Image (cartoon, rainbow, N blue to C red; front, side, top):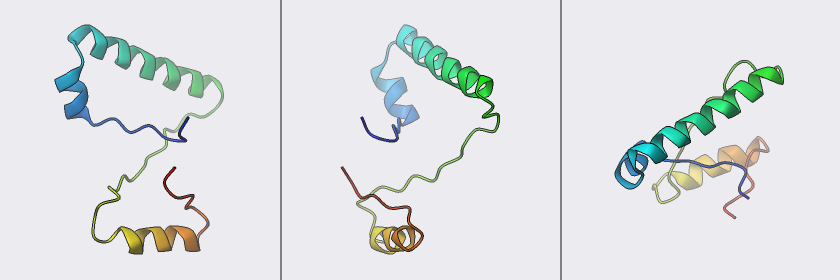
Length: 73
């Protein structure tokens, strides 16, 4: 499994039924509650960059420099 899963809100809305959207929301909420129980109270915030952007090389080089790039898998 990938380290991260990114879901675009429009895709969820367009491709999941209302019941599926409710279920997904409940699962996400359960994970949040479990993380809080583990003492991880502040949610992480991420920046998402599409790899087809013209500046991706610069971004990945900065991330490599700081030890935060594993590359696409």
